[in-house]
Image (cartoon, rainbow over the protein chains, first blue to last red):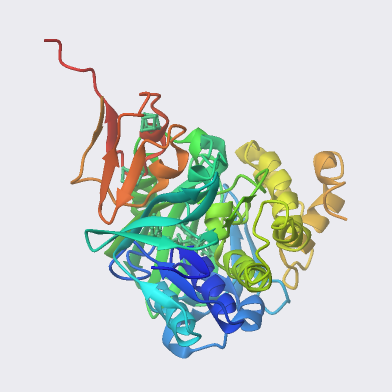
Length: 391
Length: 60
Ligand SMILES: Cc1cc2nc3c(=O)[nH]c(=O)nc-3n(C[C@H](O)[C@H](O)[C@H](O)COP(=O)(O)OP(=O)(O)OC[C@H]3O[C@@H](n4cnc5c(N)ncnc54)[C@H](O)[C@@H]3O)c2cc1C
Ligand code: SF4
Ligand code: SF4
């Protein structure tokens, strides 16, 4: 088989890439190793309303819930509420990703991309020292697909970059390891996404509760890999459930890992581009990666449509993509990485003090960045190290 | 030797993402370990469910 572009992985990054490239006229093949796109889900499914609207036409079939804002809870129980309606807010919709991911793949298919499921990429094909395609397994049969450009959208477990010589392995301090239950309980707050902080609750991370409808929520935990030990996430999540939702019934469970490494050195090689979690483009503070994956996908897909016909797919030509994502989504990823590096080592006392410093201040209309600014203003000495980042 | 408890594993791919030797592969619902594994133990620490374990090879 021959085509202009092979996209490996049909998550949000892959589908947006395939759609953008196919719309612009490329002959695109997108491979997905799972037999069902989007399932099993590895996500808490929270996205910013404003950001999502700019990327895709909203469809109620894949929106589970709409929230009013976020509530942050300090280790000592002090609460702080942020409302959603600010542009750039971190929360807004809670999706149904099983449906959402497939809908994005369908959009790619409608734009003309060929989609192949239960098709796992096994390695690169090489010709004269440069990648010339992908070898894959299609429902157990071997398959070779020749293409001048390969886009790795293969998520946290990405191999495409490694095959091309990029070391994308995540250090334990650069991954949040997670477990999540879909919980049915009358105690669930259906209007707010909740975040619980504390070194005992979730070392180097947080517990979240994202509403999914009446009496239903994704309740999950993320722990910094370097602070985790075998099975820590599931153990601490069960403990949290016992303390907070003792009557809660678990309707689904899932586990996962989110990159929080900040921008990696390089996301391109001759004939190869990485997008989304494969390029470690998820947000180091929130662990949110859907929007960045989609944005990077559009950039990579459009660029591919421009460069492939000209035959300019060597690493140097692909620097346009490198530059473009670093100057857009990359800025916030870098900044939030530095902020995360600082926050993960705070004690519970530090965290309590920070949240108390907001007493009497109306933070309801702030987004994450605005909140950090206020925190710095209130705690100039303590947060000195962050000052240069948030201005 | 690295062992995978397939009854515990939640097939999330986190271990694959951290392995410095690229010795792991997630195939739908199971994890494969190849000969490149250096038994460094990194994956065992980050597995959210504790499905990975380094066990001493039996003496023969
Ligand atoms: C517990 C948890 C909670 C999260 N919560 C949120 C949240 O609330 N909001 C948010 O924005 N983000 C969240 N994220 C992050 C978000 O899920 C990811 O950033 C997002 O899915 C990245 O999209 P992607 O397309 O890059 O990768 P993925 O969605 O992971 O897609 C990669 C695809 O590639 C396929 N693939 C891999 N290897 C191959 C191969 N060799 N051949 C063929 N196919 C392959 C995989 O099967 C997969 O379908 C969360 C993550 C976790 C783990
Ligand atoms: S990290 Fe654990 S649960 Fe996830 S795929 Fe690896 S062995 Fe399975
Ligand atoms: S023990 Fe180390 S080398 Fe072996 S699979 Fe785990 S992370 Fe990879």
